[in-house]
Length: 213
Image (cartoon, rainbow, N blue to C red; front, top):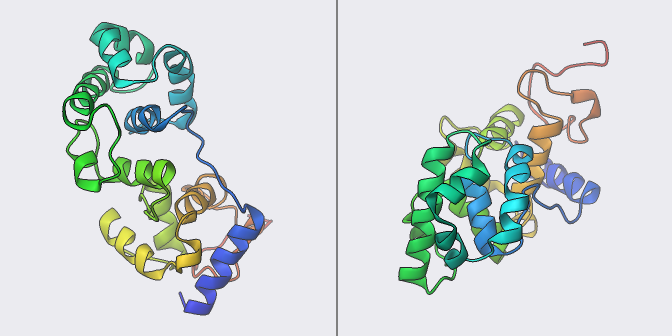
């Protein structure tokens, strides 16, 4: 995608949604970390349904450790892979207490060292909790990057690197959310809703859909 088109692309997304927010429920940086870790291979709606009652009781690593493994499992049993995720949530809570004074670190390597926290989760947390201009490439952003021509790549990391290079500084903070929302609601996997897309004219996808189908 040409630089002028990139500017148009992001400018329109910004104008339509100047202050985008994530759809996961959380109350502080710790509960954000837990929610994002739980969202792997799960929907935000499903995670929110489980975490709303959990976060009414638990807002700190200490409270999570006190709740214990069985208590965590009981709260998140409706989420896929809940057994493994419960173990990871307990373990990452213990490590936050032990290594970081119960504070979620604004550090990529430190976050990725926590159980159940990969590059994508760390990027989301740093972006949403600390305002870092990171872009966490999930399935939606991977699809948008490739389909539109904004940042084509064969792996999530390749798409992430191209997005970071292609995205102008003025759009870097919110790019993550704009791209996710575009992929989730408009540039959908099975059939993109191109007639409703505000950036369709700068998108390089050759199989654009029409009102007739």
